[in-house]
Length: 271
Image (cartoon, rainbow, N blue to C red; front, side, top):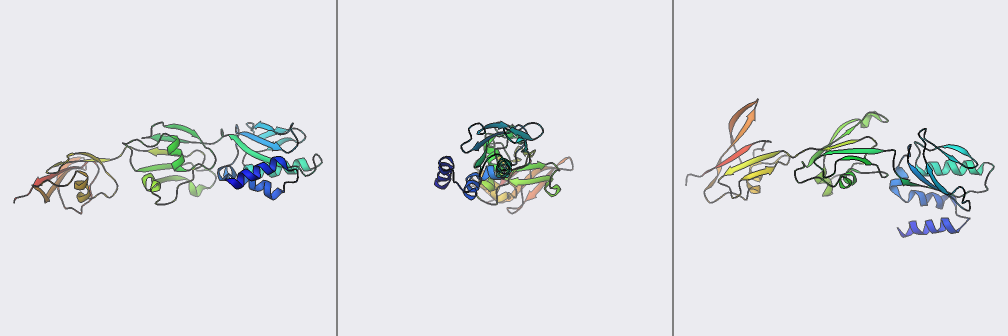
């Protein structure tokens, strides 16, 4: 952070700032460095010692901006660093000697993602640079207590078709540092479904409805319910579940996997 501040100060005060240092200033913000500019984005372009050029520019619907001296400049599809180089080259072509240019995003308007389902404030979110999945969930108010730990990211086909389709992600694992956070793309649809549940009753300490995490075993379900009572049996356990549209009773072992919608009953032991 201190390095970034130093570079910004140098860009403001020194007319001899090198192109390499100027590039470092822009790319210091990783989000802005990787963001692709689009229509309606608000840009802040600073040209050293040129106050008439140093101002805010709205990207038009055709993806261009208009600047004094150089006229229309294509901005859409470029990163801030790319546009910075383009503007610098145009200004240097007969207008200014060794122009020093910085391009920053003032407001993000062109790209967005949609977060739906079990979050506190579902809706359309503008992408603030290289937005990640966890950042989008936080911007949507975070998942509710009824949310499943697994969500889906639906990505439209466009650009790299290999990225199209539906991806399943365990967001709780990401919060715990298990796996890499997902970098989102414009148009991604994130859906946080309601958690699947099971009900457990009988000779357990806390009968009730519990969130079903993937791979939960009967033994883990009993632990969630506070364990067995003094009279509870770890061998006489059954589940009522729907199979092929019919309700059936199934005998369970401790290592068996609980299914969504199961009603687990723990019977008492014989002695």
